[in-house]
Length: 207
Length: 250
Image (cartoon, rainbow over all chains, first blue to last red; front, side, top):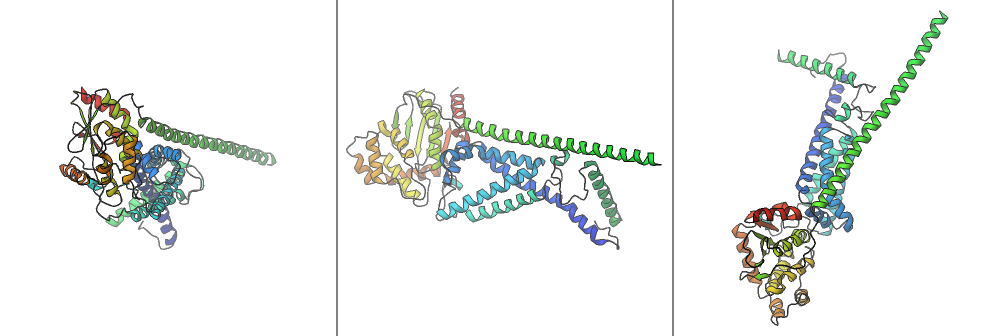
């Protein structure tokens, strides 16, 4: 948005910020979904080891650890798919945020207790170097970053390209939504008009 | 004029009522859509978890196991007489939790297949760990297993996984290792001294180095190879493992 009339510059700028917000949400959805789907996919072929991995944290009682071990990979994949297509976006964001919070707590607790979660049997070449850092800090930072993205998704759901919008089940009060009603056609028309205006201004710039 | 105003007002009321009804319908439609999507998602998760549990369901142990013959290099062959192929090589570390998970999940399938004469199993107990206390734990256990005669080897192997210590503490202490041997029926008078003196500790480490240098174990333990081909996750899914072995036997 370069085309700015001198009379009202401020509203135009805020409108462009408002237009960017849902795209940020879409990007956040894709990043969180990517992490969840890859994490789930790596575990889903080996349920026995998935259970073992949960047990390694020594935080959950045996039967609960078993259920979590079997259920977590598929949960991650389903939530990831929901985020990709933008269906039940806010709920999927909440689940993602809670998962990441649980991982952060689990890793921090394992670290504090001196547990070796990455059991060494699956290290590079199988031979762990002497004094090799299990990398807990990095994992905590990574998972906390994903937690923040998930929190963004919860706050600014559902973003662009979301089934929630297409099905008319998006959260009613969208912070970036200027239209007060739920009428999707109007919203889309407004967007299209805006895009056209943007395109025209770009052309002017180029010409 | 008054009549027209009344008509307009009535029309407005009607429109308002219509809008309200429309809103109510819309709300109901939203609830149904959300509930449907949520139910489908939860059902998919439940079905997936159920399927995962099925995939890792263990076989029950058969009445008999195939005879075990300890080799000169410390590996152990489990096969019915005359069965030479297919060959299932199992590289494992008694201290490795993932190896314990393999034994708990697929151990019975492996024993049953050998007893059925479908496969020749070769256990390769190695020491994969380079850090303490896991390294010494593993060497002690591996060296002790080398003191056990063929007749009790499999039972001792199972006992070691059953008694696997945490990776953060010193475990597989020599007293335990001696006691477990007697529990599984080792009567050899030299057994206790063989374990306590750690007579085979160097042989265990040399064999591990040899195996690791050979490239048979690239990703860590357990590594399961069927006729030389790594099975990866299949080894942890008993039904799939059985099928892979039967397919290889054709």
